[in-house]
Length: 160
Image (cartoon, helix red, strand yellow):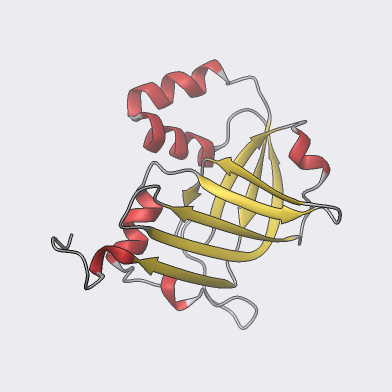
């Protein structure tokens, strides 16, 4: 995949354009799950989910038939947070429309995420166990983003 030509319809938020800040790069490469949020009209939903970033969109993969697919649809506006769990906190928040893409077997995006989260060998072994399971890629094309990085706060004695 990789970066596509930017058009009037989609210009990446400045936080996601190269060169990425150290904070954003660390979060996009981390083993922290994304927190995907949306509303089904009755209640907000938030789930933890693996992700991969290709320079243009955030891809999250689920298995065909999962409950979340009853609520997610092409064009739905969602929000995602990727954030640390210990102080000093770092976070990247993204939002925009999603597109759903069914796949036969394990998607390349899921394979990339599994290698990052589990390590190359363990990720490959995990994906081999799931080879016959169809998936759906949830592709978020960010239209807005915000970040925070408390590691440079003036009250910290030992900056990172």
